Length: 140
Image (cartoon, one colour):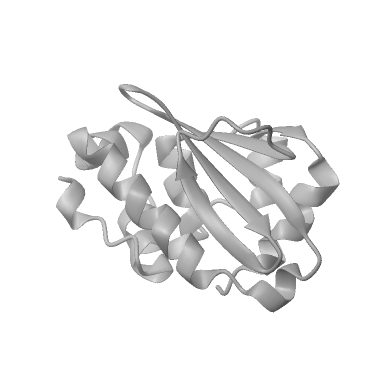
């Protein structure tokens, strides 16, 4: 059940997804993928550190493949502020694609970015060097 996912706390999210199969995570999320993802992107917005992104202006797109279809979120950074756009359609500097279970593992810190990329779980397109630098924008 999606209610069991506390995505506002990275450590709690990690505990919920660690050791679970994709099928178990998808079943636990059920029809609540939109709510879980909305919470995660709101938490990302709250953990954004403007000073760490000084001078950056970019659109970052996330394509998350849930059991019932892909969800697109865009994270717009400009002049030290950030905005989350659900289903945004603006051109992205970098696009990151993951399955919903791997996205939850990635955000929870259970799946390391380099490991995700090297094993094909994280698909990147666009400015890959930029993708590495944006990790520092968020409080962990």
